[in-house]
Amino acid sequence: MPPLRPRQQQILDFIRAYRADHSYMPSVREIQAGCTISSTSVVDYNVRILEREGYLRRSPDISRGIELVGDEPEPAVELISVPIIGAIAAGSPMPVPEAAQWAAEDVETVSLPPELTPRQAENLYALRVKGYSMIDALIDDGDIVVLRPTADPRDGDMVAAWLKLEEEATLKRFYREGDRIRLQPANVQMEPIVVPAENVAVYGKVVAVIRRLE
Amino acid sequence: MPPLRPRQQQILDFIRAYRADHSYMPSVREIQAGCTISSTSVVDYNVRILEREGYLRRSPDISRGIELVGDEPEPAVELISVPIIGAIAAGSPMPVPEAAQWAAEDVETVSLPPELTPRQAENLYALRVKGYSMIDALIDDGDIVVLRPTADPRDGDMVAAWLKLEEEATLKRFYREGDRIRLQPANVQMEPIVVPAENVAVYGKVVAVIRRLE
DNA sequence: ATGGAGTTGGAACGTCTGTTCGCCAGCAGC
DNA sequence: GCTGCTGGCGAACAGACGTTCCAACTCCAT
Picture 1 (tube, helix red, strand yellow):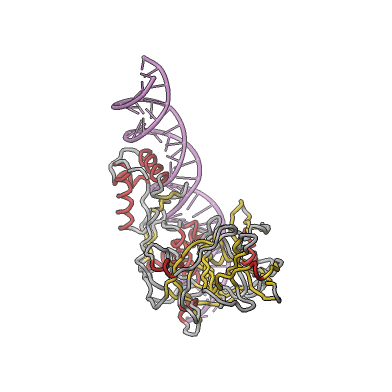
Picture 2 (picture 1 turned 60 degrees about the vertical axis):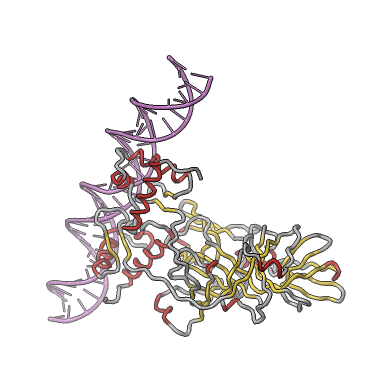
């Protein structure tokens, strides 16, 4: 990465400082005011460079849609315990994660090593896979999948989806295509399925798969 | 704090999940869509209650100006560290585990949680899978396989085998059939291969597979 | 029923905010 | 001189977004 121009460094510093004060991100005009820049276009110009250089990401047309990369507050969490709240299989209803269940003492749990811990490690839960219906996602009978509730999955995310009409749970890669959704098996040899968005409920995003063979 | 209404709990869950996915906060309309609410005013109404009850804070007139109050980390236990001594791919020679390598400081390692630790946990090593040639063992590009050296594998064990003639590494279930060996893909839809015993070198037995998706 | 409190639905208003476009100033190379 | 490049400026546009108002609906005690 080439060294940043003063302006860009100034803007980056401002965003970081702002981030420390609020949990939302600054708007272009707030950056403008904070760095005493006289036009929003200058901010846009430099933020665009910062994005190109990989210092941050932007979501187009979204207010305050800046995301700092490498912003993990990650205070070296050593080992976190994730409850296995049920099983997932094609044709049986999917367990819905509820905070109430997590307090229960009799739930089995699995621990995640640091390498497996996602940046955001809140509200994780795990499911045991029953049967071979997830085999196109490269997931075997007995595997443990670790999930995180997701508000709106991004294209390419591996998600646990419930097909309402078919009454079937499935693990596939998620792609939005207009008002329909393409679910793509992880196994490149297999064909995707495309369904209307209203037929799909996404319960979570797969953050890890664990298979124990001995 | 009084118990939350379902709507409010739903909205709170959505905001938390959303925040796991982005570093900025959801807009009112995104909450609306994500919770399948038919009006933004309903969102506003309930978010107002959540604010009054102290679950979050809002900055008036600011896009995505919601802030969650309170964030917390987690405890820890024990875990063992396994060195990743190389990569495995069809066609490239398989790294041989040597105690000498393990002392090296620059080797990457992966930690195994207690649930993944086999009873016999000595001399474990791990390999990173390159490419899609192990897909019939339900193993994806980038997966980590944890192995234990084995003298004579038992039938049904998943082993890392080196096919001498083909110069190919592979992960398959191991079955002895007289003076030949049947290597059976984990994927039940795929066909086994049968080779003479002298064409197979077994480097280790797979005790766990770890896949990280985020 | 009856009324009121709690909640939802629909729509509109006005502001907030990202984005774009044209223009200008310096500066290096030819 | 001309040209291209970088960086800054100002204004305007279009869409994103918070907010508000009002009608309607549910539920429950009266």
